[in-house]
Image (cartoon, rainbow over all chains, first blue to last red; front, side, top):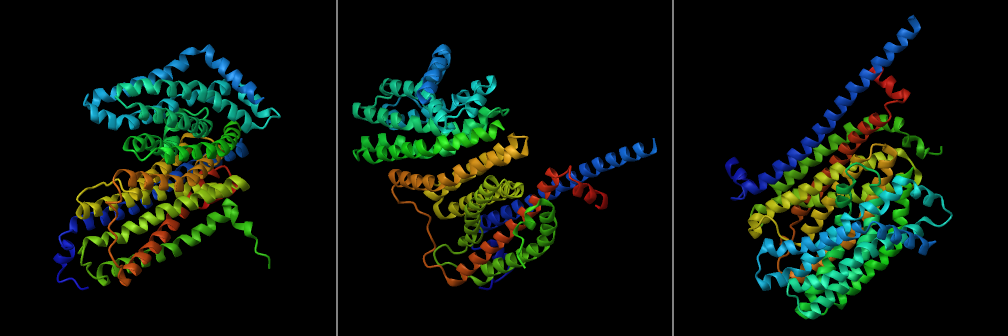
Length: 65
Length: 219
Length: 245
């Protein structure tokens, strides 16, 4: 099944809009999901390291004072 | 114990008579809204009547789910019930039946009167009432699971509807379908028997699931 | 050498195991997607009846399968979490829900986009489409319930109850919708299956289904790791991790 040319491929027998519409949305959903998880992780890491630094600070103060 | 719970809840409901009536009036208002929205055209209304009545019954019973456990939850009697030697699902069954008696039965009684508003023929009215009679307890039973899960949560009311509406769909389909089947002449026995099956199944499973949900919520 | 099954059931060890597994699964996901799309677009012949529009099937059917499959997997993890009180299983169930909901939405979206050229309408009250929509409501109900409860332990258990109640209801909903569909419209409008599936079409679809499956594993593992971090923030191993990370 070789496509005559790239333009045929995108035209997809006249149904290009529907076929590529669904595949683009599929790609968007999947990438979006992964990006969401990564954002969630990054903010979490930031929070945790802040807490971590804060506890570190407290320990130093206790030991020094 | 079982009868005691029902008696107690009925007594409580009778004291706050307003609660009983609000659900009923909600049902009446919602049903009467549809002709205003859709227009007075008779055949249209008659075709729509079962669906409208059933959706209104669904919403009305769901609105009152909130109160099933929350009053006992707030003043602590729910905890006593959890601690009581009686099986919790029996207590839950009592509460659900009390809830049904307070909200479901008035709907069933008023439905034929409203049916006339939709110019439903007599046999369709009969089937509608029968289907509501079979269906509304199932709504209370399944709703109890949602009410128990969302006990004491902020925005619980909306959440219950989100949880419970998908589970109401089979009851809605066969409830409204029964009336339509009878008006088309197919006879509503199949639909009503299926509604009966739902009733029996939920009578067995729902109290047990609600009890489990209550224990989770009360931890 | 008795395999200690429960070694990986503790969040700490699962965290590192998942860390190692994610790269492996992501590579397989990408590879399978490339193969699936290649067979789908370049190997499978033009369908004589639907010409090219049928190629949507390569994403539509896997998404629908995955939406159903993920709900069952979610419900079983939730049941395990409820029965054995293992926090990790409930975390995995919570992690699966968004991906399942995404696939259900995808199945509905691609179904509508495929229905438009074939039947001329975006939405048809066909039994399968309707039950897919209800499945989406079940997913959203599960996620909404878990979001509304602050205490993670109660959220897990409450989620488990609603997931199990949902699983029991899926067949009932499906059959009642099927019955309802035949009552109203009669079986006139049914999803026009492309007549005889050419073998390449079938293989293309299966490869895509596998690819979607691998994809869900990757995303679920990632999300589980995030949930583990979130819930175990007070533990020592997380703070050590913070020290190094």
